[in-house]
Length: 211
Image 1: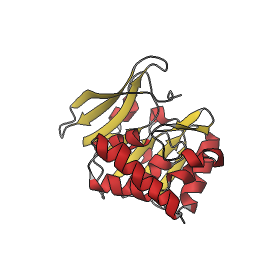
Image 2: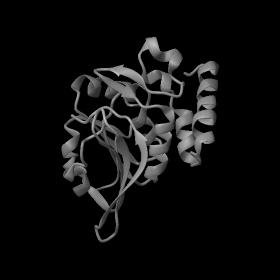
Image 3: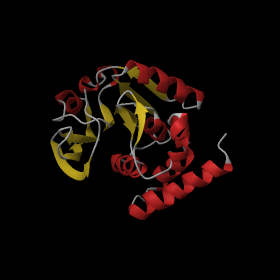
């Protein structure tokens, strides 16, 4: 169980880093208030879990800063009946947030060690509506496609065609795009009811590359 101290830090994080910067969806804010971020980082970083910045999680990967988690989650407009495809499980924190908003989350992680540890962590913390698969996110997960919502938390140089194809008509995908050491932009990809795709840039970001 979370201590009173970590709960206070989490509530302060949401107020100072998300609400004051424009994240307003109550369901998203409540989900982030609920998920114990400190449980998703290694012991040496637990005291820093609620700062406004990314943290290393091993294997050359990071947990995104809280504001980016909030911004991307709100932008995705997840509904309780949705199945969300997540590319890049990492430590499982974003997965946990999505699981509180969606019917189901299917999360893909190319690094086997991270996939195993995040699946175990999510299960231990009680997030049961989640599937974690060790898989190449560029190819998506065709078994349950198409998806009404897709979130990508690693940065490809261009949007993988398989992910566009696996996005449901009427669906939304949010994905960072760009070079590893150059400018990256968070893109909002929408597909209308006829299947027409629109891609709009939103925020400048910095994510680890999609392998």
